[in-house]
Length: 291
Image (cartoon, rainbow, N blue to C red; front, side, top):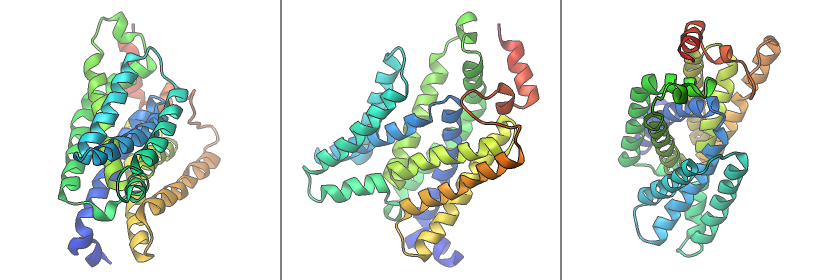
């Protein structure tokens, strides 16, 4: 089995492209969940699909269209005083309808739209692999600098304002990482599979362990394990990869409920305590920095 997965050129590049994406998307998904912005991932992935198919209509590179559409939405999001799930819901609807409508203007548009929504990992090439590698490298490189700033902003929202500290640098870096993750994931594994990888591993990982650092590790482990299992199953059973990956991630979600039964006093919800996210020493350090 390892032979056709790793040494056959037909599967080598897709396998490693998806594996790198699984690690990067799981980490960025953890940041989105910590900020209660996980639904934005689905909205942005749908918008990226619209941009990709619009670029196809205009005979432009698909990546340019996807990045332009996702970037425009992030700029609009930053300009709005407040944005919530209702706005993300509109993004999802706009993305779905726009993908299908624009697809009607090109030959085999419905096929292109299906590939963007469902995924086309088997058709990825070295460009996708390079993009996934760059995304993971930037994520790991910026994570030690970005993570404490996002945590402080999440749990002490007035800290930066009270201390007159700039917020645009870390917000910009985080926005660029999210855009890169969503666009790369959408054009490589599809909009819905990319959202599943951003959503499910942190959803499970935050329950398996205590502490922020360990939650990042657990989320990445869940995402990579689910990806490998889905890749092998999809090839062995001759099934489309995107739906198989989503189904495997849903099965991984049962770990959350099993763990919850064993640890009744540990809850991960929208109003969970800070101590569930942070190791004790990190929480105390953040508390001391707070005004």
